[in-house]
Amino acid sequence: MSTRPWAGLLTLGFFVLVGSGPISAQPEPPKTGTAPLEAPKADDADRLLIDFVTGPGTFSEKAFTKGEYKHARTAFTKYFEAKHGPAMRSALGADADSLFAWLDKNREVKETLLTAIDPAFDDPGKAIRVFRELWQADPEAVRKSDELATAVSVVWDDPRAPYDYRGHQVRTRSVLPDGVMKVGALDNFKYVLDRQSRLKGPQTQLPWEFLVHVVNNRTPVAERDWAVGKYLPRRSGIGTVYKDIVYDTEMLRTQSRVCKLNDKPYTLESILKHGGVCAMQADFAARVGKSLLVPAEYVGGEANSGVLHAWVMWVEVKAVQKEAVTFTLESFGRYQGDHYYVGTLRDPRSGKQTTDRELERRLTAVGNAPLSSRHADLLMRAFPLVRDAKQLTTKQQLAYLNKVLAVYPMSGEAWLELAALHRDGKLTDAQEATRLVNQAATVFAKFPDFSWQLVDELLTPQKDKQYRTQMFLKLATAYENLGRPDLACEARLMLVDYQTDAKEHKKAFDGLALTVRKFPDEGRYVPRMVTRMQEVSKDIKGGDALMTKFWLEILPKVPPRRGDEVSAYCVKLHEQAVAYLKEANRSKEAAQVEQSLAKVKGGK
Image (cartoon, rainbow, N blue to C red):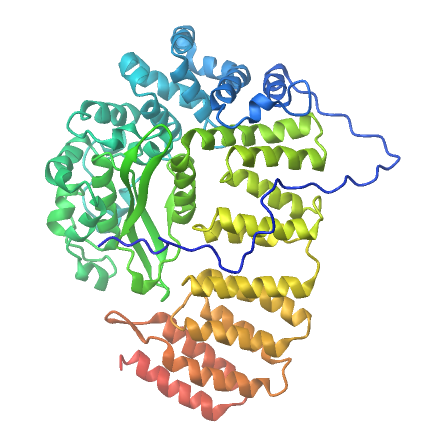
């Protein structure tokens, strides 16, 4: 069965909305006698976008009207071509005139492509060269499959971005097939086009934001065709092929010195035949999924015991319509007993590391409303330019962000800017800050990682330490109830800072102890938590006795083994306890823990 450990997360129950109206602005601070700074001068390209967004007044209604994405897309395309056209034409050389003439005749293709290319992630010159390669091979196919062509262009402009599985081949000392590193943009484009009739389904109609997780693939075509022949009937739930790879226990035991794949071809068929550890299982499942046009990725993470692991995630597509993509983000190999709360993967666009939680948030934002999501994204890409060129006041910046959220409430970029305005002291209304925390928690109810990212900055104006203490106590409790000890521990550690500032050391100690008791197997956080407990106990009368009692209570609750192996986390925690007890001159208790440690190491 596939696992979705974050599926069905409920709205954090303690949040109470205090209003659903627009975000209000605080009065502007009184003006001083200093002369205003001169606004930066915008070039002609910038002026195109600024004029569209601002219009004759402060803001243009057309730019911010929900459902008017096409107007924003056209305006942004004109800006982008004016801004980056010279660089793109230079990159195209003699082909520039003919390609741009073709794009002018195919406005849908042009606007999809040029609004997708984002200089924050992409190189416009290199991206247009990738697009040219596809266009030269088959202009009509590009016209009919513009989302696919766009996905290929924004992935393959950076050779570091496509998924690179050579590390697994090196680790197993197997043989990399000829031509792996020669697989490129055109191969991925043609592969999808040439097999659309056989691989028909909603996957072929996905927006480019999903397709980047299909075309970031260096697997040779012959291997992909093998995968299609063997696994097409299992495309629904494709990630479960993870378990088809027999686990190589000898590879684990010898720490990869001896592998069943040694000197064998590192191909999908060979991996299935010889087996491997979790990294090969996840690599196999992800590349089989991509071969079947299923967006899929190799994901890694750290277990609560500290052990590293890999699993596969994929987009289970139900339906694709212009208004929405119905899907779930599934995983397999993400064993629940190990509590992999957050996994990491390489973003197929930037080549940089991101998290599976962030991936789900971004795909959900696009999937829920593709056009509104893109509309809000374009407005936020214009925000720094408009803000600086027009010298927007704090009140005007707030109005801009308000309008973006009216277009699409899930615009993560708008929320991050709102949080920054509070963090930097530009927005100072404590009551409004509290309301925003409530609103963010509601909008991102299924994405507590993102709302947690916003909370502390949004609450900057809230100077009432008692209120902040209560808020973080509620956060810690809510995350505990959600079964997210990682977030619960982070919230608890922040709460302790407020409690110790208020000289409430016993409350801080007891709160830390409460969280550790709930999650004694959480090896990533418990060592930090008990270290903080040790620090806090120094300011409590009889604190060393409390800490000693707690050590003796908690250690028997820590799982001594992970599978057939001694838990490195359990050993580490015992060693931490021994060091504390000896320093506290608790020799009897230290000897007791040392005896327990010997049993743990002996596998008893």
